[in-house]
Image (cartoon, rainbow, N blue to C red; front, side, top):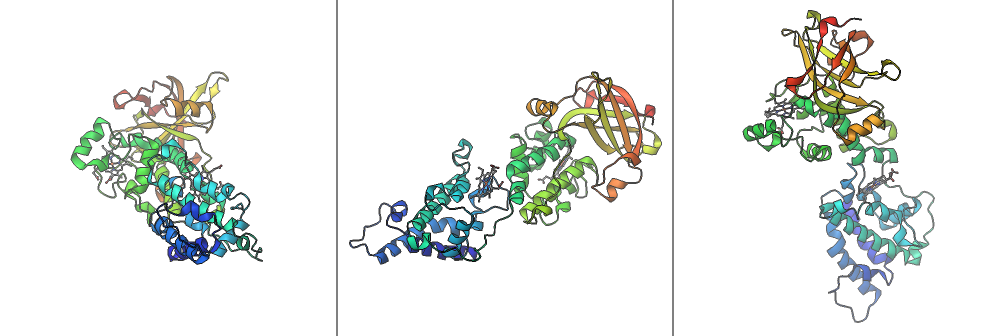
Length: 437
Ligand code: HEC
Ligand code: HEC
């Protein structure tokens, strides 16, 4: 409906407010020049040019070029109203068009952002962007050249655009989403033990058996993986908790890798929060700033292939979710650091009296540590560490996936020497029978 309206509006707009200069910008070179250019002929010509150059862009069912950087919530169509006049009045009221210098109009800057980025070269969206820019530029220029439109009186109430509040627009920007993806999903990839990491021997073997779909942690890194997942069927936008990205590792849907997470553990929490956010953005559930999830204030997380093992676990811990928070020794003040430097959680293997998992490193966003780990491979130095252990005896996390483990679950701590070598066969081992309150 909206596009049909829009077509009508551009035809009217181009024919209605074309000044003498406007057609030059849009007429195809081969168009025959009318012998006596009466206004009616101009109208016909403009309509024709629109049909040929602008209509196809707006008839396209594809999202606008904005989608390259904004996950949703922003589309060029939101800046358009059914009538040309309303669109003009709304854009003018919002200060998005500059009638004295049409080429400086803010709407053109919004459309053109990133157009000269070399990364855009060859993208379909870059072509679309150019077409959108040219169409709007021509229209604004034509409006500015028509005194009747240019000087249209300000109505009592300017028509409203269907744009979203800036907070919502900011939240759904791809660069912001990527930050949250890195800390929530990308950092968890070693929990999936390279089975899904493109280019590793483990995944190469599984790809042979199950096809390319298995290698969804992309070689290209966090951004390539995010783009792949968002477009894949692994996320269920209608029922986020039923996404294969959760139901497979839960083994709720039969999973080639077996049970790899449980409801409420760190992996589940991180994956679920990210999926819920993507679904809410895509389904346009956020319409005002108070709808947005709270800003992430926690540490930035970095995945590693260093394993921590607790052996001789007490019987009471058997088959319960165990969280291990690791603290580094700060020699400058001769004390343990205030915040954990690493963490992990998983269900204890009761029969084997054993708990082991890869650790996730934690750093305050923007800190030297976070910067170092973002630049080079994140790793812990060998040395003296403390582990604090939490046991979810009451299955709190299973009942409420968002519930954090804390003082109620604390069962004690113990100091140990961490070597933090990488790999399954080089675990840092701690005697759990020494864990004391
Ligand atoms: C190449 C990436 C890119 C493209 C393409 C892009 N944007 Fe943006 N957009 C951004 C970035 C980055 C910001 C934040 C800029 C800043 O804070 O200075 C932004 C900010 C905005 C804002 C302002 C919100 C705020 O933070 O105040 C609006 C509105 C907006 N874009 C609309 C659009 C529309 C409409 C399109 C398509 C016609 C579009 N953008 C295309 C990257 C892009
Ligand atoms: C030991 C290897 C292994 C581990 C570890 C593993 N998986 Fe898998 N996973 C598989 C295999 C094999 C398949 C293909 C067969 C199937 O669909 O179950 C698969 C399939 C999947 C699929 C479906 C992919 C698709 O496109 O159909 C998802 C999603 C998934 N796993 C998520 C995870 C997550 C998340 C983790 C880590 C928390 C994980 N897996 C850990 C072996 C593993």
